[in-house]
Image 1: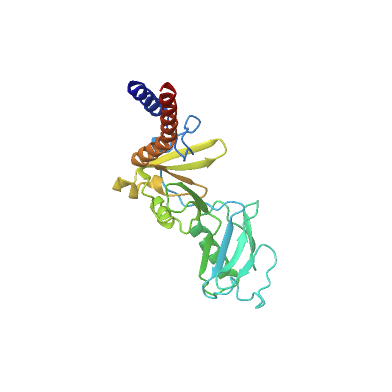
Image 2 (image 1 turned 90 degrees about the vertical axis):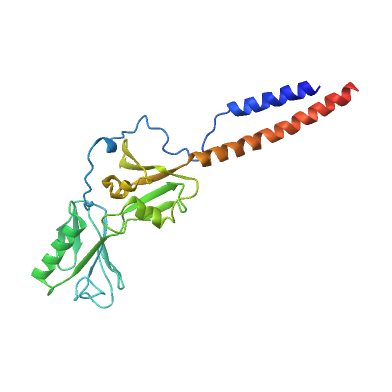
Length: 260
C-alpha cells in the first residue's frame, strides 16, 4: 500500500512538471510577423514632424492670456481655437496640413518640427501684427503606451521633444520587482508594418542609445524576469497539485478502509 502511494505521488509530480508554463502577460511574444529592423540599421533621432489632426497649444509669452493681444477679453473663440486661461489656445491641424491662426489665417505647418513651426509663427506675427512676440508652441496630443512590469500602466503624454525610455518609465513610477530590465520592447509602426526594438537597461550605454528616444504612438512592453516566472510557475503548480494530493490521500484512505 505504501508503495502504491509513493508511485501515485511520483506520477502526479511528473505530470505537473510536464505542464508548460504560460505568463499572464502574453502580449507581443510572437514575432513571426514583426520586422525587427530597428536593430539592423543605424538609427538617427529626428524631431517629431507635425501631422494633420495634431493639436497645437500656442501662446504669446508677451501676453500670457492670448496668442494675439487684440483677442476680445470675453475669451469667445470661434473656429478651431479654444481659449484656456494662462495656457494659450489650442488649434487642430487640418487634413490639408494647415492650421488657422488669429490674424494670420491658414498656415502650413505639417512636416515641420515643433521648433520650426514655432519660428515660422513667431516670424509671421512679428511681420504682420505683434512687436517682438515670443511664441510658445506645444503639441499636446502626443502619447505613448506603457504595458507590462511597470508600476503604472497606461497612456502617457510626450511632454518634450526628446523623451527617452527612462523618462517614461520614471513617469510610470519605475519598474516592478518582477521586471526584466534586459528585455524592454519598443513597438513602433502602423497597420501590418511594426518594428520592434529591444532595449537592455542593465547596460548603461542604453542611456545614449538613439533607439531609446520615444515617438508618438510607441508601445513599450516590459516583460517579466526569470525569477518572477519561476516563482509564479511554482505557485501555479502548487495550486494545482495540492487538491490532487488531497484527493489522492482521500482515495487511499477509502481504499485502505475497504480492505480491512
